[in-house]
Structure formats: structure tokens, C-alpha cells
Image (cartoon, rainbow, N blue to C red; front, side):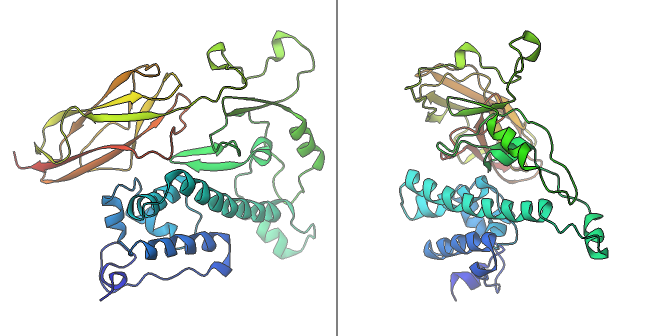
Amino acid sequence: MSSAVDQGQDGGRRGRRSRRPDPSSGPVAGLAERLWRLKQEAGDPSYAEMASLGAAASKSSLAAAAQGRNLPTWGTTWEFVRVLAVDRLGRDPVETEREWRALWKQARDAVMAAEDAEEFGQSTSDSAPDRARQTSTPRPARTTAEMVLPHAELDGYHGPVDDLTGAPARIVHLGSPPLGSRRFPVGVIAAAAAAAMVVAGGAAYLVWPEEKATGKNTPAAVQSSDDLAPLNAVPKDDSEFIGDITFPDGTRVKAGSTFEKVWRLRNSGTVHWKGRKMVRLGSSPCPAPQSVTIPPTPPGQLVDIRVRVQAAKRPTRCKIYWKMHDAAGRVTMPTKRPIFLDVRVVRA
């Protein structure tokens, strides 16, 4: 029998054949159909197998991405694509990331346009059906800044991004638009577009123009001198995995014991790591902290990252992933694989 029947879309049960999404039913289904085709091209592995190959997303999230019911986050989409297109099919990671990010953004923009049309373009008639729709629980309105700037979700980061670099952008929110069936005033959008845009190091700041040059109206988004760089400089944030210092993959640990996992990385970019953390992805039968602090690390220097983990009380396998986040909580180096620990818990 084919692997689609043997393993099925739920990642393990036999007898279920994954359904191909209908791309004509909408942008989300269109993206899901592309993911479905990629999975077939890569041999139709189960979602459990994709997770074992290093996809830093749950089996249910991977399965949902290829079903087309809801738009997956960019982080889930990239993990789906990376293990199949890059790791299994051997495609270039940079070109693959660029191609699929564009596809994901097309779907996202189409969804946002439909939501805005529904929220701000409703008929002004006072018919009973219209009033019934207005009394339903409204979708949280996006702020003016969120309507002006592009949006994305990057492995847990949800916020604006720089369309040129794909890097998350920091903003000052300008307030919420009117709710209900009222149309969003064009003048407000124009005012937001005219607000001051300051771009440095891939971070976009959106602030209201000041009326007077006084200390009382200083914009909330102010860069420190450490953040400023020559205009022609392009900071490179990169890392190199040196190795497992303790508990290499496959190490056996006693049930109920506590151990310290240590990885060694090199800051191989040009950005000084300050205020960085490794944030855990997903859950595991072995309790571990949600995040661990990375000591300040200048470019070129080595750093040891330590995390204390408690082994499960029963024999099992524990594989836990972590991704680096900056001081603002944004994921860094999204195209790189997360670091992980992988141990076998045995009876004490």
C-alpha cells in the first residue's frame, strides 16, 4: 500500500488518505495545496516522521497547515517546508525561504484584505441581518500602525516585518480604529502614512510627528547609540553550532533525575548578542524552563548555553527544541534550525 494510506494525514494511523485541498476555494487552501504537493514530492512522510526529522512544530500544527482551514503561522509553514524541501529534497535554503515566504505573504495579505472588507466595508443598511452580524463577537480591530505596516508570524513572534528584509519591525501603535460597521476614515490612514518613519538596522519605527521640539513629547521609540550604524552597513546576525558539551544525542538518563544540558555556539555574525534568550518550542515529558538566558556575546566569541532539565518519571524519549530570541522577544535567524536535546529516559 502507498505511504499515504499506510501513514495517513494524522501522522500514524493506517487507512486515512490525506485529502488534497482545493486551491480554488481560497488563498489559505491555495497555500495548503502547495504544501500538500511538496509533501507528496518528498515521498509523503508522516507528520510524526517530519517531526523526527527536526520540524520544530507539533504534528497537529503540521497537519493543519496542509488542510487549508486556517492560515498557519509563518514559523509552522517554514518548518513544514524546511524539513521537506531543504533537508529531504536538497534545495537551497535561502531561495526556498524567499519563495515560500512570498507565497505565505500572498495568502496572508488576501486574508487580511477580506477581513478588512468585511469589517470596514459592510453595508450601512439597518436591516435585521446586518444588525445580527454586528451583535456577534467582533474580531479584535487592528491598530492604525498594523494596517499601515505588513504583518507576519515568525516562530512565535506576531507583529510587523520589514518587507525588504523579512525582519521583524518595532513600532509604536497609534491607536485602534473605529469598531462596528463604520468605515475607517481615509484621513486617518493618510495621517498614519504621513507619520514619521525611522528605519535603522532592519527595524522600522512609526511615531506621530511632534508638534513642538520639547522633552515632553519625545517619541516612545528611541534608539540608543549602540543601535546606530553607518547607513551603508548591513548587520549580519548569525551563529555557528560548535557542539554538545554535555548529554549528546541519545544519552540515557535515569527517570526522575535532574541534569544540565550544555550547547556551545559561536557568534559568527556582526551583531553583539545582548539580552538574548533561548525559548523552548512545544512541550515535552521532561520538564524544562520556557526560556534560558544567553550571556552577552560579542561577534566572534564562543558562548555556552545551559539549561537544567528534569527527566520524566517513566521511560520515554525526550526531544526538546529551543530557538534564539532577542531582547524584544522576536525570533532571530528564522531560517536556522533550532538547537535541541534528545535523551532516552530509562528506569532508575
